[in-house]
Image 1 (tube, one colour):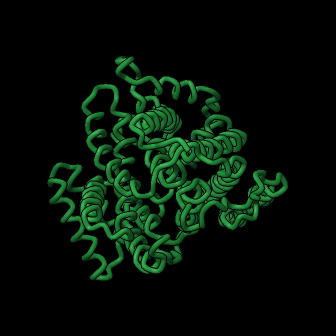
Image 2: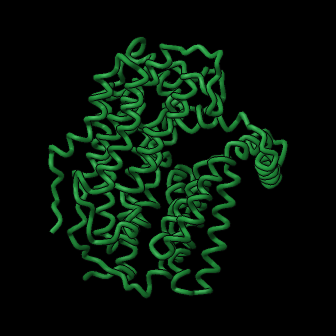
Image 3: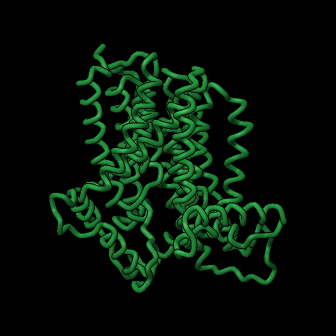
Length: 470
């Protein structure tokens, strides 16, 4: 019988790296290293089941989309582990080589260490929130026969995509478009992973075409995340049946993406976003540039710049910590009040303030971006947690964030008959924004309406007798 409670003393252990980093705050280099390595310790203690035993209803390879794995690794990993290149840049490194003439900016170094301590605290709180509510023992009241599962997943992919397009055409309901676009992608990828081992040629072909279409959409988006997620998710879904192939193919593929994407994205944006070329032409130019840079073996400065300033958002976080609370007070409940405004669909409130404008106001106030600039630089979730109430705000809000992710995953599995439809499809499809951790106004709005969509989909499937009561 699995122990449902995470022992408090083991939860407390997760916060020891942060406490040690605080203790060594007088030495910024050491403090940063302790906090950064602390996140890897948190991963080890949580993913091995030391803090709380992992769910035993499925093998590890068959539950990787659950919050303790997928959400923690992507959200916390991106947040807490990617700043190492920025730290190296602060210490005078460029392309992993020490630049002898570089003088270390002590103020920048201290702020980098401070933000890394916040990242470590956030990671510990987030993981604790997940562990406190991680309980999959309660059986679902609903089920679907395994014979129908593969076809149902393909149906989800086919139906969700036109639904996402429809929502973009209806004024005030465009927020649902992203939900169903993500759901369609997850459903199509999951359906492909199901069809291959079942040796269903028809399903496999349809799902493969759908996956290629989604991957092309990611390539022409101009953003790195959709491309990486497209490869990562397919690898995770195939892993239970093809472990060696996934490790041998998908792991190198992800590493290659991190090598080529900086050059690819830079060239694509220069051509497509400026209007100098169509999306197809920009894609070809970007691919040629990425391949040529690899073949010639030339150093691409954009790669180091990508690792330092774009892979991590610590530089932006530092700017917020420099202005708050020194020149701008903590926001208190203001960001939650603005999030409540964002919840109202524009179809019911045509004059509703534009959410992006509300978010960008604090970016301008902090001096992160000039008001005359057209650049969009929305703060990350941890930044908003800090702006709300400093370190205590990070601790409480991240704890709640982890708890919400876990509670929704458990609820989804109860509503949809288990892990495959519940967490792998519905949770990962509708609540994919929780992997990224955007500004409060966007993420609270998305979680609320995605939850409504989840309940509506459940009602439709039960009414159609696709989901049956046990």
